[in-house]
Image 1 (cartoon, rainbow, N blue to C red):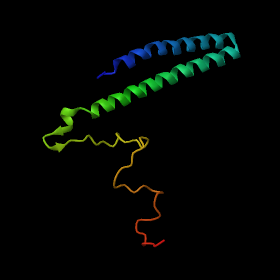
Image 2 (cartoon, rainbow, N blue to C red; image 1 turned 120 degrees about the vertical axis):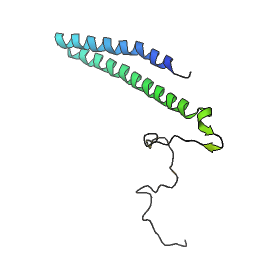
Image 3 (spheres, rainbow, N blue to C red; image 1 turned 60 degrees about the vertical axis):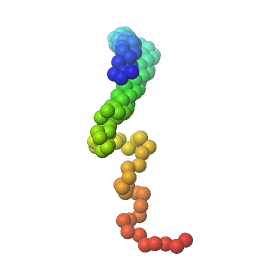
Image 4 (cartoon, rainbow, N blue to C red; image 1 turned 180 degrees about the horizontal axis):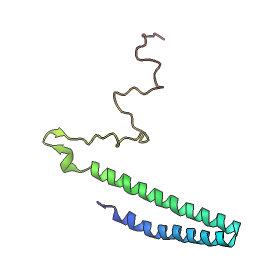
Length: 115
């Protein structure tokens, strides 16, 4: 699964479902049926949330596949890392070494305390 195309192809059916819900909602709006408008709106939101999660899955699998290319990670004996500012978003449960986050310490220099 190097290019993850089956995830994108799976999105076609869900996008058609979202489009059908939006068209049915438009029809309910012209008819003035408030109950059906709400039902079709919920259906469209559900379909779009599935599409969003599929797209996030595709992006994360693509990022993982790019990071795990063995022939580009080590060139000779020097490891090559792809460090970009956009690679770390803060939600990956990772702690960046050497970074003092605000709110985690009371100050830069604190006296030694014996407890």
